[in-house]
Length: 280
Image (cartoon, rainbow, N blue to C red; front, side, top):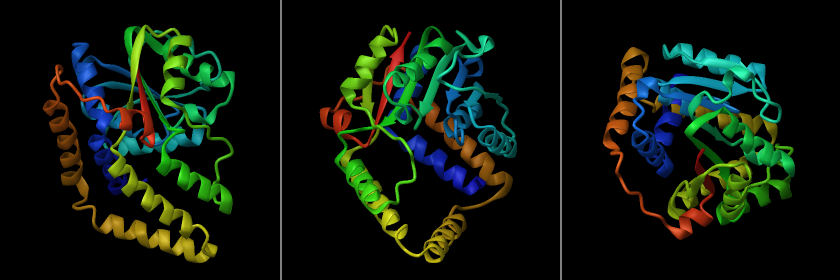
């Protein structure tokens, strides 16, 4: 994970339909960002937590994989950001020190990797970390997305899908499981327009085709793409670091607490990704 790649991930997050919704919800709760307590479960690269750390929040990153936490901590240090890194499993009881502590608990690309009752256990884990009136922000793939399903079907058919379990959610399942987990209220919002999904998953289909090439060729193509991406990512060093932090702050200031975001039945039910916003 280079800074150029992380900067691209950050900018992609800022452009997402639901990131503005999240910032507005935080502002409506009237919690200053320098007092905001955030936990990210199944943190992976910790992109969302890093953005909030830039804005002054205190962030805790939770993952069951020690090597993931170690790599993410290195990335934070590279940006001069601090975080609390905790090894824990979201299907077990959370550490006592974390329970009821956070204003915001997030996850992305986590809850779909469980089946049966474990899906509820995962969502309950988010709730147990939240204080009263806390916000959960849980992003998952959508079972009814035509673009997502077409790429997944192609990968499964060609044997290039390397994930042992991924069960996307539906809008209605997220609402049901939110209620079972004991949240007071919430809503589900699609992550992107259908036009943007079509563009993203067209690239995903090309990526799936590349995986059918001989290993040496596919690896070479991906290395070339990463090199091209790095060369086009703009300036490096301290100037680029300051620039990405300033972008995050400008985006935060551009969102008003009373902003009213439009609902869209098509996006909120058929986008490739869904985000559950739920309040304790």
